[in-house]
Length: 189
Image 1 (cartoon, helix red, strand yellow):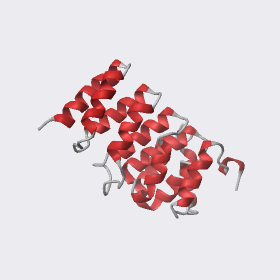
Image 2: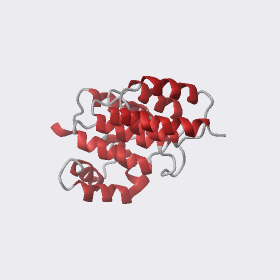
Image 3: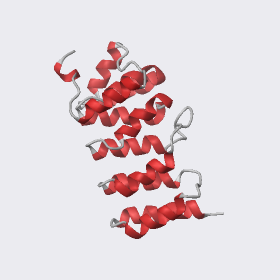
């Protein structure tokens, strides 16, 4: 294992989440592993296409990529999970909602909230996870994406009062605008 393979800090917890799932963090496929590292370079788009084309075959490597210290690699790995995430990716996505990088958190919010892109919906409390991000994330951009994804979810009885409360306390006008739409989506008959 080379120096750049060693997770540090918060990423160590991501690696533990990957290992806890029983998924082999790295399949040993050199093409996928090289593509994961390439996501952190200017040539990230070619690597993204390789991994996207591989689909489910590369998911274990993509999950492993979320443990690396390079923010760009984590961001693009989470973006790949938007289309290829499955039940095995839920614990990692949940953990990435509190990543140190707001960009990674934003992609994790989208990956959890956007169910239509996946082969099958993720089995997790999507509405509750999104409400939590709106309430607690320090980044207005992450909160805005969470509010949008929440508006795309099926109505749940407990969501509307919480959305109304969050709307009344939100400081960002852009987030408030999206929350207004989200509240309409969750109160329509």
